[in-house]
Length: 424
Image 1: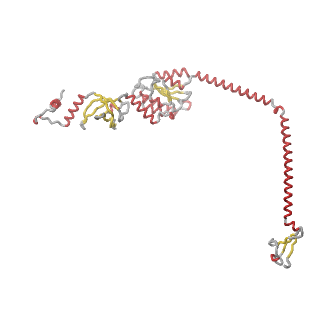
Image 2 (image 1 turned 180 degrees about the vertical axis):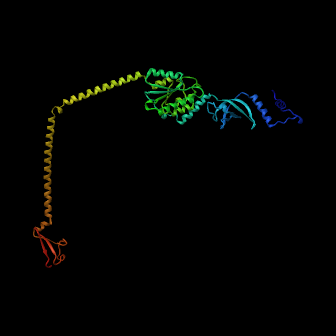
Image 3 (image 1 turned 120 degrees about the horizontal axis):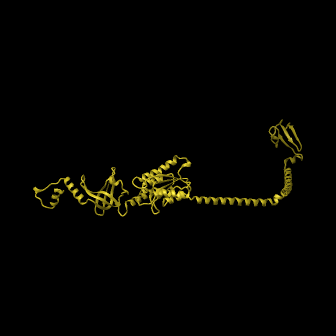
């Protein structure tokens, strides 16, 4: 139904109106009229521009501006619309928005109410993939230093996938074909659709909780997390941050096996090992039993040959020793060493006697010289040495002794004890 006020306002725009015929609008009326014009004229439109002034309110609503080099348009993206947004909105991002133009009454400002937003030139899912990949890489979740080694021959393999999908069938076929002794434990989850990432994350955490409580011989050795092929949307659960964090935090080594060989997901980058398919993942951790038996037989043969060769070598050495002169005539060898000892003993005795004779001659000469220089030698020619007994001092001067003192006189042979009767 056509608004008569709007019609009059439009028809009368620019016309001269008599003062008595003029209509005075209220602010609310003007705002309502403008809203009607904008909503009817720009009901479903696409607008391209650069994101600026982006903010996310605590209510969950998002507010930002779209701008080009000449103008700016305010936009609002309500929570009911943005809660399923696949990528993160950032300032400077070129986007295309779909929605309707209207007026926010309180500020009298026209703005775009966005119902859909897409990155320009790249899909929303691809944009989300690149954003999360960059974020987790900067955190170091892709570093090789964080990756755990995959056990060579696990006894228990945990699988996180759909119970009805091709992935679990392929894994079981490989196990049956290669090594039936391996035990496979499935934790069934949905692998696509809303909430699938929560189930996958929970299943990984449940395996880790089980290992923390299980006995050593009952623990799960490795996990295979994945699904068969599909579109980017089908594989999207494995590009979610919840799954990436669960894989990174897992104490059990994880092989990511999502899609086909050409498919890459965030899970592949975070996991300890990436397999192009679920079948390939099973082949990575399950060697063929026939190959193991063959390798074991080869090692057994090598061990047998080594033992035989060692025994043969030792036997030859023993034969050579038994035929040697030492073992045939051991007494002769001992006698030769005894004779050699006798020769060395005689040589030592002769050298010792010679050295003693030389030293004795030197000693005699030195004693003769000492004897000739000895003051006692002089006494033998009639001289004597007199000392005061009390002090032991040698009397060199008559004044050194007092009358009545007792003295000892040493002669060439013997001593005389005297008392001084007088001093001259």
